[in-house]
Amino acid sequence: MALTPETRLATDELTKRFLVPFSIEDDATAILDCLPLLPLPFRGIAETFIDRLRATIQTTAAPFILANQAAHDKQFQCFSMAERIRARSIDEEPNETEDELEARRNQAARVVVNSKMDAFSKSEEGIDSLVAETARFLLHLHSTPEIQSVARETLLQGTVATWSTLEMLVGDELTLLLDSRPDLVTKLLSDQNARRKFELPKLNVDDLASRGFDLSKQMGRLLFEERDLSSLPTLKCACEALIDSSCLREKLASPTAWRLNQNRHLIVHRRGIVDEEYLRKTGAKLSVGDQLIVSPTEFEELLLHALSIGSEFLAGLASLVFPNPSINTDAAR
Image (cartoon, rainbow, N blue to C red; front, side, top):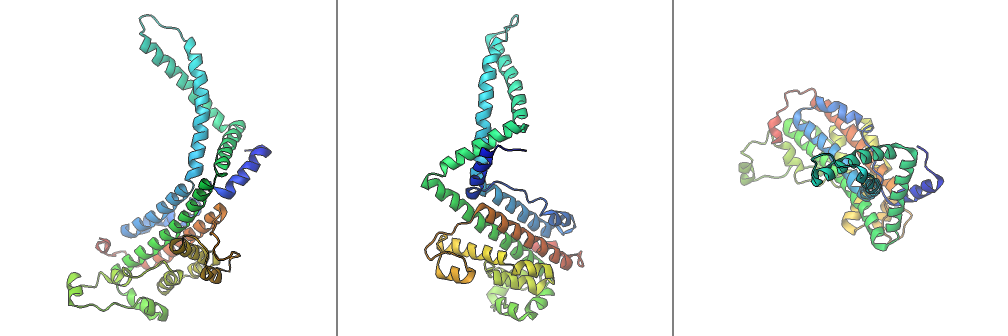
């Protein structure tokens, strides 16, 4: 597809401000391939992880999706008006009522309009026209402070949703794993850092009674239900204590993972207003009081990295699950 120079310039400006939806299917192949092999409760959590990332992309790209649909609707209306006028030349048939004639004319117009719109949207000229219309519309809107704020906020909230999706995956899967395999608690707590972060709570008689005096299928919930995994060091500690994977360690130690987590904290706790702690922890070339800006390109990088962490995590989790095909699925309930 060859866009005109003017359209390319407009799209270059557009993609600096608004997210254009992108596919994660290629990057999610490893997860999708192993889904049928996972026990059902584990599989459901992994499927939710993929679905939530897809939804996050669509939500964050909502301005573009709506503008693009408006461009298509505008072109469709142009074709529709012209064909409805042309359809007036269709003559009345014998014994045909006026309403029947009008319905036949409208149907004939719809057939032509749908055909023209399909051909137009697949042609180079049509694609260029629709892309240019979408870009012009969004860039015009972005000239107002209100839409600038909306565009920025959409990407910030998408960043928070990206981290939350990863946090959900790790927390839910590890809870289910330890509920199903309480023997792994020993492995978790043999790690010195994990022992400090995930110390077993002290339970009184009432606590034990509420759990039916049987903790054998509740060790995951006991250890994780009150633990906050919104901190990368805590999430990293839990993963590395249980899963022996150099690839997972590398992904969790990446500066991209750290930036995603620190951006999440700044957005949630400071509404994205840069403070000294953020500068100290990230080394970002910003000043105290600046508004954090997450570009569409950076958002895509952060989300794909979260997906890659999830992929390595699930591969490592599978190595703990597969040797135990009789995992008690009741623990998920």
